[in-house]
Image (cartoon, rainbow, N blue to C red; front, side, top):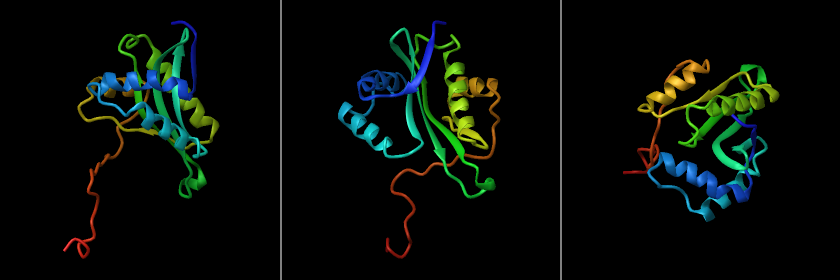
Length: 156
């Protein structure tokens, strides 16, 4: 594979990032205005970034990485990878491995005690990929859609 650059996404990258998300979500993605607003919000977090993987000037992958400060675990932060996508034209080329290596390097530079991610229960190829990188299935991931937990007294 040609030279790969993994860098924080900038506003001009958003159409390509939205195109990558559309590959996984049957075309259903945020609007460009919504994405621009969210990218601006991410800039206010010290260690939350949208990253792009670029080959020969083309954005071919993306992921989000957040470094979470932590009082537990000896005060060491943890890292969470989310929204990992590799362009369908680049799958199987090693790009995903290189992106996750970059995420791991970034987490290591921040002194994180772990790098975690979650994956859709039905995404079996993704599970095999993450396991091939050394990720272990650990614990359970739970999800709650709105409306979120309600206080019984206020819903009566």
